[in-house]
Length: 112
Image 1: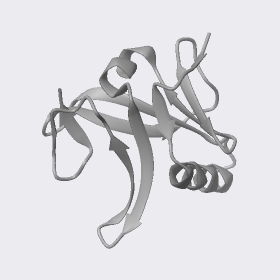
Image 2 (image 1 turned 135 degrees about the horizontal axis):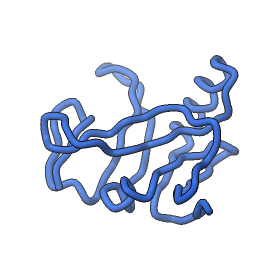
Image 3 (image 1 turned 120 degrees about the vertical axis):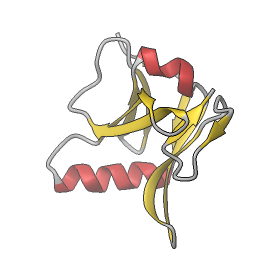
């Protein structure tokens, strides 16, 4: 069973962007955040649209948009906030991760 928990947060800016992307692709407004080994700092974030929550997912919901994190990735991103940033540096999802000891310049990989 999926868990609704305050372990992860989705900002309103990120929720609005997920809703817009999902609408263009005729998919549900569900963003999956996972962590994989690799990247320049040891671990890297991976984002993708999902069709539905899976067994063991932790779910954050804002304005009807869901953020899913699988139980394996949760330990590495517990307490994080996913935001959407659109500035001179470009438009991208950004993870504010309190567990990351360091990160890379691009913001997509981190170490613990």
